[in-house]
Length: 129
Image 1: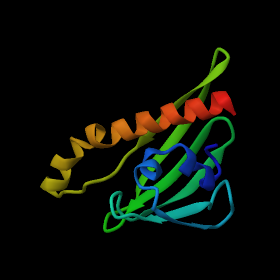
Image 2: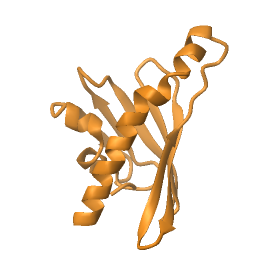
Image 3: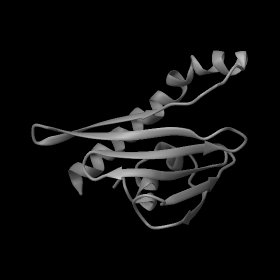
């Protein structure tokens, strides 16, 4: 559900907000080098490529929105009881640009709800599928 790029559209909120999003896949279907890009009027244009995969432990990726530098992100998986705790994070470098640094202070509030909603969707799918 996570290491195959085509399955992300079933649980991320970005695809749900724009059902007309144009998706293009390249590289392998899953694992390192798997890549997808999108074009969307409401969600913007961008791409994501998986850069490291440790099955049942971690998936790292490079996320890039059009006109911006790539940002690394990852999902970590930790066994907890009869389930799995998933931690999804992303980071970036604003450099010395004061506006970029100021904007960075608000990224958690901007992207955090999307990550939480995506994780909730992922949980529902994992528990029913």
